[in-house]
Each structure stands twice: as structure tokens, then as C-alpha cells.
Length: 68
Image (cartoon, rainbow, N blue to C red; front, side, top):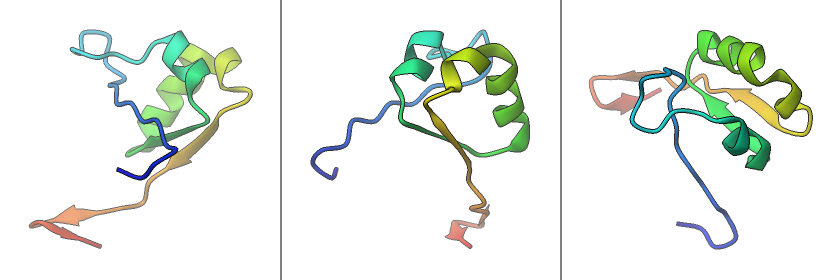
């Protein structure tokens, strides 16, 4: 892990073991999502908390263990 970075992971589903919360969104400087639907869910649920947070859609495709 690179020094100076604090990271966390959460899931957009309400019933997840570690769901995304308003506090977590407000804490983040950057949020990476894997699908457009995740970005949409975050904007709908936490729009007011995203004002100072950059939301990035990852375009990484993983197929058979190869990152493309």
C-alpha cells in the first residue's frame, strides 16, 4: 500500500456486509465504481454528499484473469 492513501471498500446494495453510507461518501475524495449503474445509485442516494467527491467510472475489463 502506498503511504499517504487511506482506502475503503463498500457495496451499493443495501443488504451488503459493508454497504455504502453517507458518512463514507462524505469522507471520500475519490470514489471508483465498476459500472454506470453503481454511479447512478450513488448519485441518487448520496447526491448532496458527492459535491466535493470525484466519482470515477473504471473502464477496466477483466477477462480470464487478464486486465485489459
